[in-house]
Amino acid sequence: VKCQRDHRPQHKKECKKRAAEIRHELLFKQPGSSHLGDCPICCLPLPLDPRNFLMNPCCTKTICIGCNFANQKREFQAGKKENLCPFCRTPLTTTDEGSELHLIKRAEANDPIGLFKMGDICCHRGEHERSIEYFTRAAGLGVAISHCILANAYQNGQGVERDEKRAINHWEEAAIGGHPGARFNLGAIEEHNRRADGSQADRAVRHYIIAANLGHDGSLEQLKKLYPLGLVSKDEFAATLRAHKDAVDETKSKQREEAEAANFYSR
Image (tube, rainbow, N blue to C red; front, side, top):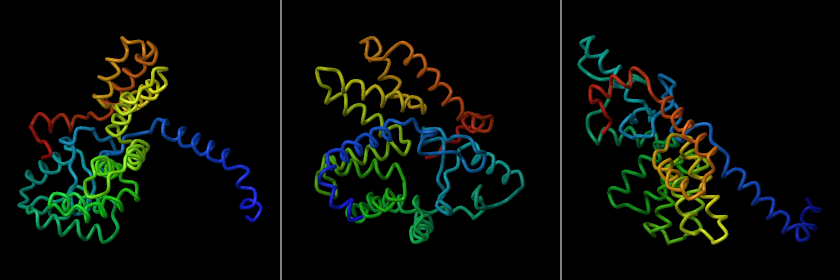
C-alpha cells in the first residue's frame, strides 16, 4: 500500500486513462435484458410499454398483464370475492392509503422498488428533498429508473442544485443498468454535441443500436433517420432490425395477447 501511495503521482495519468477505458467498455456493453427483467411468474421478458405490466405494493414485484389477467380470471371463475396478488397471494388493496402502507413497510425493509415508489409518492406531493433521498437510496441499490429521475433532477435543478456532469453520470448508470430510454437520451445528447469530425455521431449510433436491440422503438426510428445519411452501416442496420424484432417477439405470449384483447391494461 505504501508503494502504491508513493508511486501514485507517477502513474496518475495512466490510471485515469485506464479508468476511462473501463468506463467506456462498461457503458457500451450490450445488456442481456432491459432494466425491467422478466415477469417472476411466467419468466418471460417484460415489455417496455408500462401499460403491459403492474407493480403490486404488497411485494413490489412487477407482473405482466398476462399473468395478472390470468390470475383475476381464475379467481373470478372460482367465485372468490377478493383479488389476491398473483405472486405473494396477499389481498390486493383498493385504496391509495393501503398501497402507501405496504410501500412504507417495503421501504423500511430497504426494498429497492419500495424506496423508488416512496420517492415517487413524495415527488407527487411536492416533497422534493425527501423524494430525492428515496430516489438516491433506490439508485444506490440498482434501480435504473431512479437514476433517470435523478438525471432529470440534476439536469433541470429540481430539488437539487443544477449539475450537468452528475446528470450525465446518472443517465449513464441507468443505461448500464439496461434502461433503453436513458440510453436513447444519451444518444440524443451525443448528437447534440456532435463535432465536425463525426466521432460523437459514432457514439450516438452505438447508444441507439444498444437501445434498439432491447426493443426500444424510439431508438430504432432514430437509426432509420441516420441510415440514409451514411452514419449507420448496412450490416449494422440490418442486424439491429432483426435484434429489435426478436426482443419484441420475446415479450409476447398467448396470455398477454388475451389480456390485450380484453383491453386489460395497467393504469
